[in-house]
Amino acid sequence: MGKRRPLVAGNWKMNGSRSESAALLDGIKKGVSSASKAEVAVCPPYIFISLAAKKLSGSAVAWGGQNLSVHKSGAYTGEISGAMLKDYGCTYVIVGHSERRTLYGENDALVAEKYGAAQAAGLIPILCIGETLHERESGQTETVVARQLDAVLDKHGVGSFRSAVMAYEPVWAIGTGKTATPAQAQEVHRFIRHRMEAQDKTVAESLRILYGGSMKGSNARELLAQADIDGGLIGGASLQAEEFLTICRAAD
Ligand code: PEP
Image (cartoon, rainbow, N blue to C red; front, side):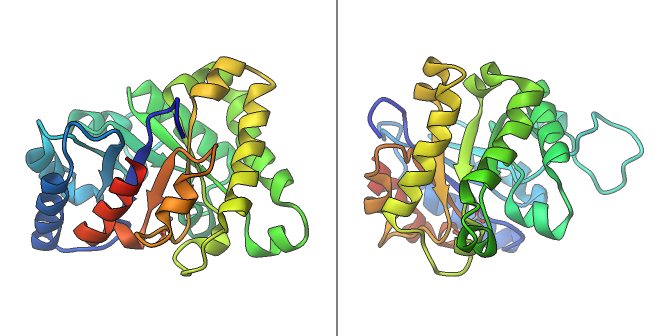
């Protein structure tokens, strides 16, 4: 970390009731001060975003969506557009999360389209990339990460990363309790930044690359201490205010 402002973003996934979400939002809001060095954001399920907007307006905590449609509006039952998220004050939207890629068949091309749709709506995409266990064990980590990154770079150009955040999330570490070692994570973060650097040094230096995959209060500090890890995308540990706040403090 250092020159880049750390970001800790909570991905709530499909969890929580309305009252649990309200309590979680209150707890997080109370624990984050505007003097914090790290930026903090939460990504609740769509249906709780208006609650987040109501609770977090004027606070130091930003909010965002977990997904968006590639379309602007129209006959797309069940979908939510970037403009709708923006209308509810979202700053961020997660794009290409591994659960979207594996469970909902989102391929690199669709993820790149969603990334563009997010930026067109004035949202900052948090672009997720990462390899599966099989890919890591067969030595394909860099090939896979490069392919996922290049799909977006080729379509939108390196300049688009001036208003984007990346998240390296090894699929084998998501929700499994298995965290990448700080050295394993740093190695891939370095690789991603190098690849950006080859196209634009300034963009590469200012780009925030978050780590995601079983990050929690007890392991956040050593992950966040790595030179190219600029924050975290937090799943399970973002559902408990105190646990999430411990990570936010580690990023401070
Ligand atoms: C995620 O879903 O982005 C994630 C990192 O989940 P977890 O922290 O639960 O591994």
